[in-house]
Amino acid sequence: MEELDFDVIVVGGGPAGSSAARMVAENGCTVALIEKEEEIAETVRTSGVTWISDIEKFGIPKNCYNPIKKFSFCSPNNSVTISDEIAKAAVLDVRKTYRFLANRAEIAGSKIFVNTNVTKILQNLEGKCIGVIAKSQDKEIQFNGKVIIDASGFTTIIGKELGYVKQWKKFGVGAEFEVKTEKLEHDNWWLMVGQEYSPAGYAWIFPTSKNTARIGVGIGKPDSDVDPTMRLNELIDKKMGPIKDLGNIEKIEFHYGLIPNEGLSRKTVYDNVILVGDSAGQANPLVLEGIRYAIRFGEVAGRVASNAIKNGDTSEKELMSYENEWKKAILSKINSAVKVQRRWVGLTDDEWDKELSIINELTADEFLDFIRADFGVSKMVKLATHHPKMIVRQLFNMVKGT
Image (cartoon, rainbow, N blue to C red; front, side, top):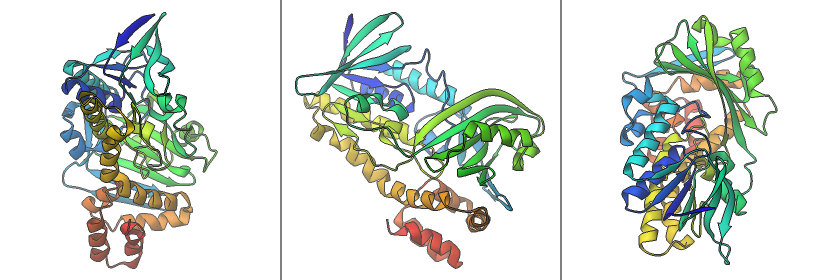
């Protein structure tokens, strides 16, 4: 068996893994980035919604995303659109973005192993993780490392094998088609809510270019047993809601993915081990997007891991600055968003009709703060003060105090 030594082993070649690997390499440590598929982003598992202010900070080029400046919602008997003067949201070309991130990690000095599937976890006599064994084509490779970063996504390969975490019990299941459309308002996304679209979730139209979009359905589990793929095909076949305005639809590619929806409930640091991205549950529960968190906290994980190695101490205590940093950044905001998401899951169609009227009272910036789960206390107080309608104030008072 081939044996390779690295300072850091990163499992998972998505945005969290590539970002962590790049930061490790830039900090002067050796790093292996292990990806089970034959190439980075061979399979797309996300709709790619994110925010331009974030991706500009991460240096993602403009040819990797389609800008969005209008946000439309429809329920069975209501429809609203919030418009902005400039684009502040985006739909990523997921494959191009993930490959850009991986290429940047490789340029920094990361060694990328694709078509390499982790099959075993290595532990020392104290039970601490010291590496992995992976199968690559017809051979096995032993990767020895001082820190292992689990960026394997929903499955959390390292964390589960070590017995640190259990399978997520509450999660979102999404099915979507990338399609070519006859007609498309390419700077306007649609979220469709209510029982006919998705019990315990929502359906969407996210434009990716002037004539292509992603049409999808997300279902919360275990809240509903509806199959998102079946519901998606029904919506497209019946041309429900705003789908009818797209004209002829040509299906290009099918995507299917899972995303945790339990809030930030996991411990994410152990001796020699860090969990990041979906492995850590770092996702916004309102629209189940987490790419910006994956990149941001992937970088933090890489920085903390490499600094710990330089200091000669990769204990849980030394690595805990990673968890402290992400918790300080988003814990209270995500906890607030979980409250709103739980409210949404229980809404009837009539209640959704009223909820859209609440959303329609918001300015574009207020709406974006809300949907991004940017629930800072000062913003909540300001919103409650500036909206005299009691129904709007009630919505924000629900999350203000957290």
